[in-house]
Length: 114
Image 1 (tube, rainbow, N blue to C red):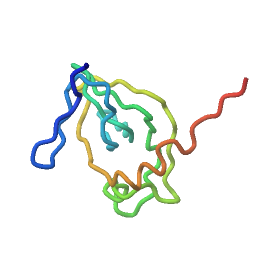
Image 2: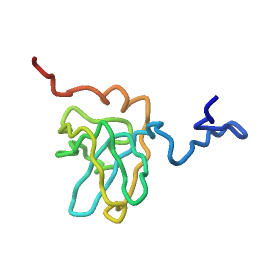
Image 3: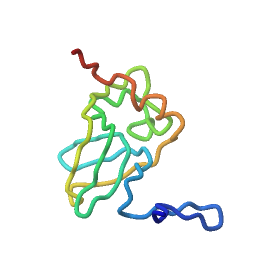
């Protein structure tokens, strides 16, 4: 029997730090003006962003905070796949509405032919 990757205490789920469980969807603001949205997980000295999309154009009138409830019709997202960033390059992580962003998590993924 394998060890569990998470335990629940007082209705709060705690996930083992080195588990393969994907993290929550968050907006990651990085140095040099890069902004990604995707599933965030820390891997030693790196932040791993899976299903990563670069936010090329915010498309909001409220700044980056206007994306907490999902992209607008004017938001431009570019699919990147998995991105690993040195932890020291991370400026901030912004919590988002998980249910709204899940609608866009796989939207616009490039299709493979052959």
